[in-house]
Image (cartoon, rainbow, N blue to C red):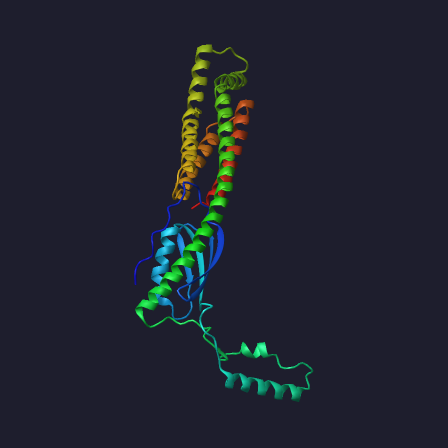
Length: 312
C-alpha cells in the first residue's frame, strides 16, 4: 500500500483550532463520506472512527491528519459504501417472507394501513450490495485507500478554510488588544517620569510629621527621594513589555505553529504587569494612575491569553 500524497503547504496565516467540515467523494467504485471537527487542545489529540473491518487504513489516515493538523482535539468520522455504479441485488424470498409476516400482523391487529414496501426493502438482508467491506485483493485495497485519501483531503481543505477565516478574526482582535496595551504602557512611562518629585513631596510631608515641623536638609531629602525612585523604577519592565509586544506582532505576521510561542510571551507580559503593580506603591495621584493603567494592561493580557488558546 503506497503512502498518501504530499499535502499543499499552508499559507502564511494564523489558523484557529476550531472548525468543522465534511466531504463526500465517489472514486474507484466507492462512496466515502468524512466529517472532521476540531476544538482547542494543548497538543494533537485525535479520535478517528472507521467502519468495522477498516483498521488497516488507520495508520495511513492518521499520517494524513498529522501532516495537516498539529494542535487541537480532532474528531474524524468516516463511512464507506459501494459507489452508485455498484449493482443492487434484492433478496426476493426474504422480502416476501417479511411482507407475509407484516400482512398477517396487520390483519391480526386490524390496522388500516397497508404494508409499506419501501420499509420492507430497508430491513436487514433484503438489499445486498449496500454494505461496505474491505476487498481481499491488494490492488483493490489500494484503490479504496485512494478514495479514502481523496475524501479526507477534501474535508481537511474545507476545514482549513474555516480555520483560516476564524484565524483572521482572531488576529484582528489580538492586534487591537496589542495596540491598546502599547498605548497604556506609554502612558505609564510618561507618568513614571513624574514620580521622583512626587516621592520627594511624600518624604517631605512624612518627615515633617515625624519631626514636628523641623527644617530638613534639601540635599538629604533629594537623596532619599532618589533612592526611593530608584527602587520603584519601572523603565526596564516597560522596555521588556514593549519588546514582548513587538515579538508578539512579529509572530502574528509569520506562519506555522505559533500558539505555544504566543502563550509563552503572554506569560512574560503578565510577569511585567505584576512587577509594575508591585513597584509603584503609594497614594500619590501619579502612582494611583499607574496602578490603574497596570491593572488595565493585566486585564488585556488575560483576554489575549483566552484568545491565544484557540490558535494552532
